[in-house]
Length: 385
Image 1 (tube, rainbow, N blue to C red):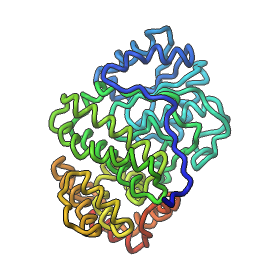
Image 2: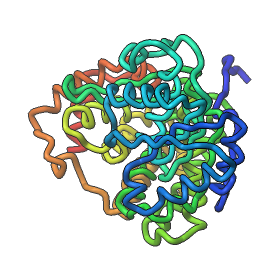
Image 3: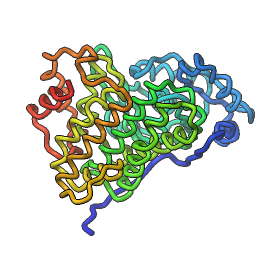
Image 4: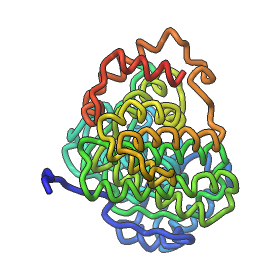
């Protein structure tokens, strides 16, 4: 075995299972007495705010509620959350919601302790010291932010996205209760589930992949292929919800350790410039990038096809590899996702500009298993159009 040196990290601890939200208060009390509760505003509309607050305060922990942010938030909103934690005298941060809420919470925890603003720390390894303890509770099965070292923010004026990437952002506790995902609408279940599939496929095929990241990513791919259609078809199916939340967790671990590839690089400009939701942008690009990348690692793409339930017996690795993107495209058809970028009001004459911005994300592109030229990037956008 000729294996390079690798590391593997994630959240400090994990609690998983239906009904596990009830353990929040006792767990939070182990970290402090006053928590900044960064709560997705949509949870209030869905009637879940009371359950979360009651669970948090059940063991005497006081909650300071923060909801002043939008989906795919800006750095200034993270600064406001950090100020709220300091002003409130908080000694821990709890993030509840999708990726935006958890990214806000992770950033708030370090901004409460470190001087400076979120923009100062966008990059890799720029946060000077640890922040407040954090507990992350996902309410969608997609981003895996509860186990990653990244918090992504959108600068809408500059039309760019950038992440704070620091080991100090790894949560102290990831608490995953599948019951919190039961009310997620079908279209969001589909797009967030495809986001998780992107994390799994990209980390599995990344040049930084390791045996441990491969293990979690491949398991996630199999779970998503089986259970995402069921979760979309019937959101009350608790078995499907449990397996999708587990898949999202595993895919997040793959992402945190092996990174993502060209799918994310190509999707970032779609979100930053045209406001396309992150999960949807990834989904629309995934099969097209996979077709391009098959040549870079046919054995792994062949294994993806097999784990997704495709019959590849008797095919060569290269032939089997080509089945994988078609399996993903078929899954997207089942989920009734949009058929192309043209349905999202993306101007066709902007594809060259999008490719230029995507290729500028060199840290992500370097993970891709096949070198991508500007012409390649434009061609992929055209195929996805």
